[in-house]
Length: 283
Length: 186
Image (cartoon, rainbow over all chains, first blue to last red; front, top):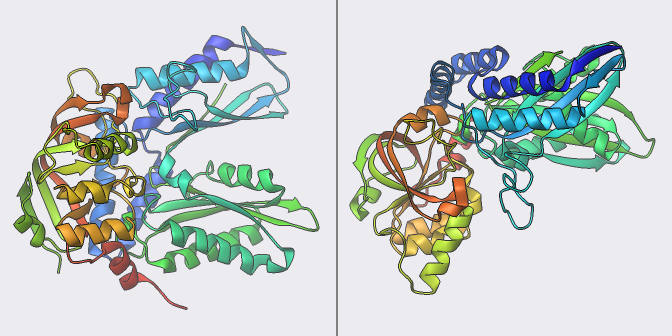
């Protein structure tokens, strides 16, 4: 049994949270640069230029890329031969999150869903984090992290289609979601699509899809082909950067497909804004 | 064709009349921040005929909830938040003198109608460019509702703050027009 100390998890998570808020990862930057080159609308091109400049300023001056420093979302794979010494994994991740958000001068954005009271006093600074844990083989802990902003979550949707609606039904639904979203989720966006599974499996899969490197295709060639098709369809919408009209609305489509019930076809669409702040560490 | 304007707040009716959807504006002077909770309080004050914490006549409100400033900085990252959450409050403020709003995302018909009727504009700033936009804010001071944290009302002094006219005082909407221009119909 390999041992990992609670405090080491806290420290690693804290550092990852601080780093991610100011450093747009290379995969997202590359997609933005490509979009900036391809964009036909001068207004949208200018917006993309601003986003690249913003990323430079954020990195060089260690300023948060966006004032919405998000809710902290984690997908954690725990090797079953690991023992965590000194406390619970969830507590360590929450503690690291809180420290990172405080020490990084990031915004506390969690609130009570009805009173809207900020929870920084009652629960903790930007706590609780959203944590998905999976038990896997091995003696390591892999932590994938995203700082997930509110604007793009607000336009995300799930629906259970009738099986007869099939592939075309999925295309129509995803198009409807992105079209209705328009400028609101801060395009150019990355679109995570969870297809199949149960209602909640589809939703979690659509979030998990966003944790892939931007533009990395699904390993299944048929699904990868569907990703390309959806990307092409969505970019016909003309929404453009920040919704001001343009050819580059969607940077990538990531699909996660799961087997489902004979009676259902669940589909979930989770949207990621252009500020795709993701990191992962292995302990 | 889109034009570039350099304007200093407060804005006059004439300033607003010169702006068309798609124009780029570099704003300088004092602007005020407010999000949902602060808007609700401002509208309550107007309804109760009480005094507002700032002069609404000619004012520009920026929908933003900044990150905390680092030591020595006036403000942290400060890009726009999604504007529709202010839609139910904005028409009342426009009726009482508000001339400009800065945010991101679509507004409803009531807001667009109020912009037309009372001469006001809705500007879009680049969402997710918080580091860049925060640097153009030279001074920031909380002037009301400190207990609201990021949602408190702040007075900001900005220099050449870049925004784009989304809804002008003539009923035009850049989101609709821009999209129409680049949409590919099957």
